[in-house]
Length: 275
Ligand SMILES: [Zn+2]
Ligand SMILES: [Zn+2]
Image (tube, rainbow, N blue to C red; front, top):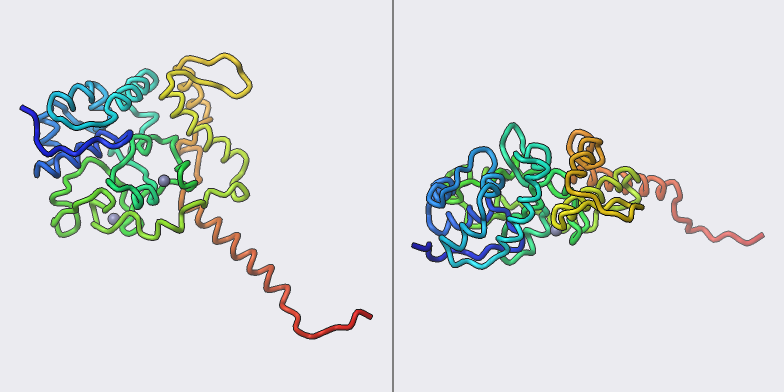
């Protein structure tokens, strides 16, 4: 029997994001729904779905359209280089979480979390040219999915859309406009830029199933990603400190420096003769 009133899966939506939206419509907890689908979530929902076929599950139990197959393909390839998602996926104290682009969440018609936001190496949004946020701008908690939207928030009254924090229920997108186009080349080092681009290239490698290295004609197999990650060429947390907050701090600092230098050159209103 298929579930009714199931929302479509959005472009590369993470399994935990979709599970939450489906569970909300069915008025059940995501873990209960996962059990019904035959998925034991454990620590990491994305990895749990990766062990099965997301597409087969979705088509067996729902009539929802979506890019389930693309998610399967990416996760299948990830499992080849990182079977448990320990090295490539974001977790804090063994809890899986997503980073997010506030501008994407604010401008999406349907609010959802992308699968790439689960990846340690995916640090910036190419569409909005900004670094991803690490946590809620109001309460500082991470976006740990899946959670039950029906009783989310401090009072347990729930939230209706995924652009709200599950902990404090405030909008994750507050002041999203200030982040757009803040990834400035002049405020980042060449090494930071290289790692940011490598992070994007690593995701592309997982999508394409091969690793292309600059200056080399021949593509490598996916296992090469493992070596690249171990050598510290990806923007993973331990070796990469450039966060959204750090970028905003650099912008403020550069603005202050500009203002200080402007104030040392006050306007001249007295007319001087040329001689
Ligand atoms: Zn974005
Ligand atoms: Zn919050």
